[in-house]
Length: 230
Image (cartoon, rainbow, N blue to C red; front, top):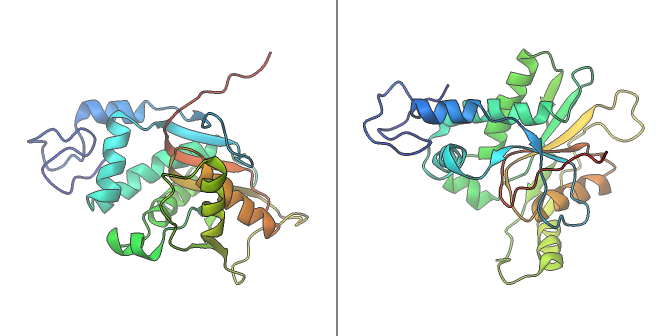
């Protein structure tokens, strides 16, 4: 499943992995065994959407994601996109169109990572969903401006900074409320931590009259499984 772009396994960085593998067999088995499930930070910020995560930000998933984002292993976009498609499928019924909106990267992040890592991965998720029978597409109605360091901000401050860093591109059209052909609108991201970014994205989209069904992410820190009430 994983393609190697070096001599270390993407999941655990074990040395002397044979070149036709992108991660060791144990890590592959762990990744393929992940089952997407509802997740949310504790506490969730106001406006945080229903969220499905592939797994916790730990172990092979964390290793593969870091290798993709920070170490230039762009071929991992395809298998990670396949995992992301599973999280989308947990939110989107197969009998309705689904539109994926990746969380945008700043211009500086795109330069550093040689492209928009979320758009690349989301594109692979779209192809996987189509192969599995969904009517799926991707649009990018948002652009991200540089955001100030939020480490010293409280939850409200982080949310405000995230919202202020996002702009809507009015030339991009997605399905809106009241549209007879309205499908399922799902935001995609790599990691959810405090939830401020996802809540801000949802707010901006809903200000533009775009109804968000939920968010699909690869990994969640502060992971909390939601148990249905009886």
